[in-house]
Image 1 (cartoon, rainbow, N blue to C red):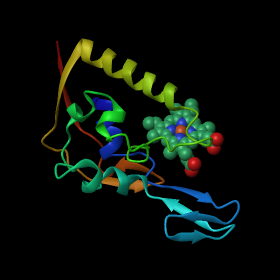
Image 2: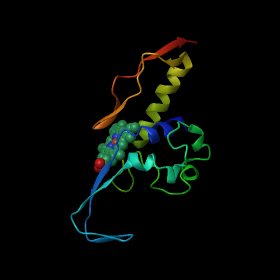
Image 3: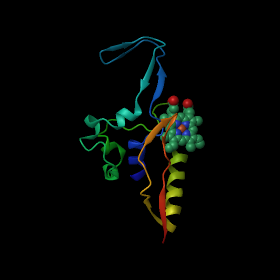
Image 4: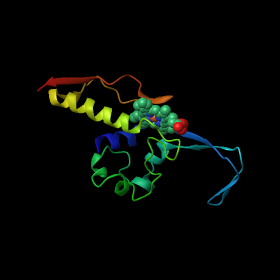
Length: 140
Ligand code: HEM
């Protein structure tokens, strides 16, 4: 739940681009062949119509009943790893690695943000903390 909520609010990849293979109808739009379409992952993850008025709050409990329930069964509302045949091949690896790293840290330390921390998510190819993330570790 914490990992999903982090990926929602701070999606490392903020958008993906796809090329239209052959002319296609998308709702009222006709997309010509070869047109490039940007899918704004970050905007979808921050859309109050999809997530509610508390969209900007960090609330891992949104995912208590899983992703399908959190997105009200709208499969494009949460796509940090993109979707379809060219979605991220590293998804399971990245998620497992994050769980292992977090559990190794939390078995040994409690941590809080340093007062020096300045919240400044900044997209440079991937989303990054502009001034780093200063934390204070407390050995358990
Ligand atoms: C939290 C971590 C990660 C996120 C959020 C992420 C997200 C994404 C996204 C959104 C795409 C689609 C990009 C596009 O179509 O333009 C992608 C593709 C890809 N990712 Fe990741 N990724 C992560 C970690 C990893 C890791 C750890 C690996 C390798 C071990 C990896 C390997 C790849 C590869 C090879 C593709 C291209 C797949 C293709 O085009 O068929 N990713 N990733």
